[in-house]
Image 1 (tube, rainbow, N blue to C red):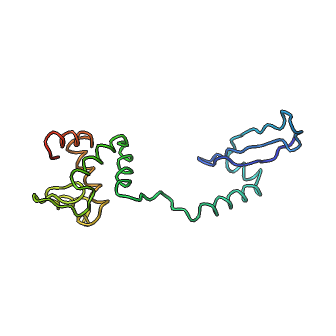
Image 2: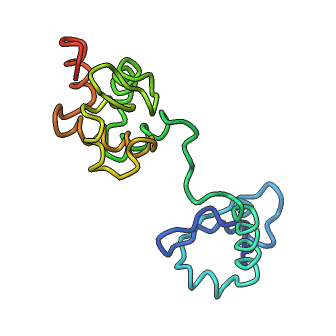
Image 3: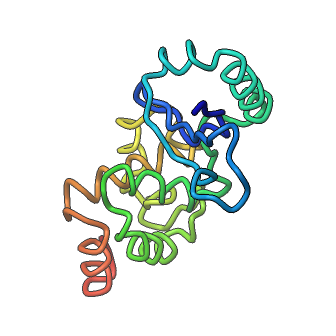
Length: 169
């Protein structure tokens, strides 16, 4: 019995997950049930080159205009992405509370002691180690602040706990 390709579910790591169905299946029979097979992409292309070209072209058209990575829309989303990259996704609430208290997430926040920026670095120019654009670049400030917290407190929740106790971090 021959089979026809019904669709490609996923392509990754050199394997294609392909759904096949019998070409001449009678309606309502068990032959009509589709099966899935993992094929090496090269074998799949050889066996189903026309279908592969159509699927690839459709995927390319659908995804060509999309950015390669999701772009965070807010400073908070940028910080969440950076925390997740460190394995600290569960620390978000503490970091948000800490920096909301310190600077309300304002890039140019400055207090009478000279602390500056989102993480309220004291003095502000300490953030220059993260980038020469530290004064105006929120991403540089967030990166520096997360590194500072990691080095000094271990985690944002430890920094937040210290801040609640001492009113500074």
